[in-house]
Length: 276
Image (tube, rainbow, N blue to C red; front, side, top):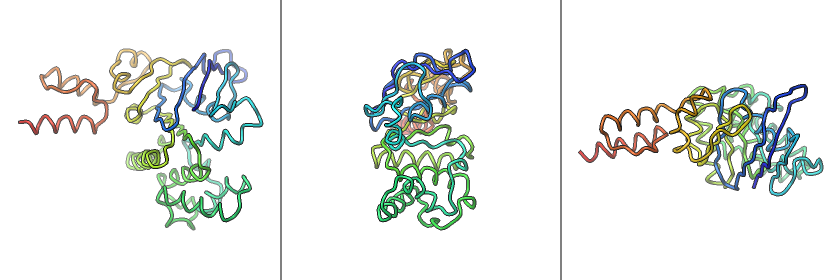
């Protein structure tokens, strides 16, 4: 379990906190989305979760380990893996398989263990056939999957995606997200998705909306995304499916009020059409 307890964080030389009095809990296996406008504190929170940043006030605990304890940081960062926005910043080796092995070699693991973990991670992200290819020859989606493989090889319990799909085209974005969610189901990973895309956030079990360093809204996406006025006040807009559902209900269609994803809307409309 990740526990964020009353955390406030200032960047050096600033007088306004990037995050103020944030408290939340992320359970093993949970899928949580964190969204908000630019400058709301999303990426700051992501970096606090695995000790890349330390709170000025409050505590962050990862399975009981305190990120403020220098001696715990290696284990915390193994448990909380991170994939960032630009995969090129995480790719360091000459070949795909060497890149996945890099973090494991730094841990001093036996060569046989490294080979086994590299093979398993590349298989998991469907890059095994490209293991000898240079990373710079990969597509954007493949690079992000390679960055994901490097994290998975460390066998984390929690996976933080910090705007990990922001630089991808829609097809590659869907490809990476699908792979992450498949892996979550297979391995029981907790996923913390940091995103400015409300359509992505709607896929989560629980959603947090940050604004000006504070939690503005929290709860299931179906509830949070119905609060259009509060979202608009923060410069955010619910997915088009929310507005479409409202318009269709006003037109007399008997649709549930909690439809937020395209898949949910499609299923509901198909169900209605099938009755006629």
